[in-house]
Image 1 (cartoon, rainbow, N blue to C red):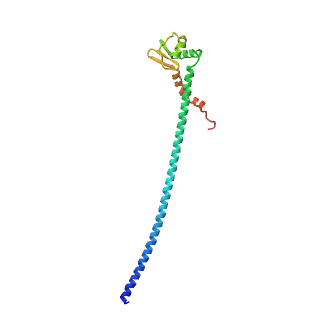
Image 2 (cartoon, rainbow, N blue to C red):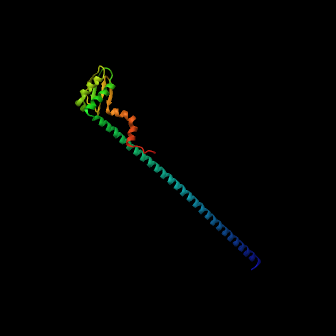
Image 3 (cartoon, rainbow, N blue to C red):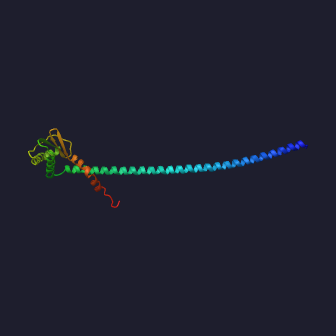
Length: 200
């Protein structure tokens, strides 16, 4: 081997060693980059999972709150229905009072709503037939110079009466009476039906 071949061979060996060192270095860098990327990917995955878990818990919490709100609304609506039934039952009970209580009650209601002058007392058909004239007579006795007569109309009312004087109708029906009292008595009725536990 002459001198040029030795130099060429030496250059080739040095170059191959340098290339091998560069390849090894590149492989090490690639391994480090891959390890760093995997670690970053794991951190991102954990962050996404944590965010997803928080969002899931928030969603569950919102659903629970919405369900509780819906349950409270349903319970309140059910209570309102029961309270409404109680007031409707009051109308029915008033309408079924015996004659000896009904006649003076209606006469007082009429007298308290009557204006001076003529007028008609309009009762539910069953009440008119049973004791209508007695109601009118007692009402006239309570009104100075009362000139009320018994009307012959058949109104759709459960009980009580309508007092018609000229163009003005005074609604003295039990339905209206109970409706007016509902605002005042609603809280008391609710307390009777649904008493609160002391200390709560």
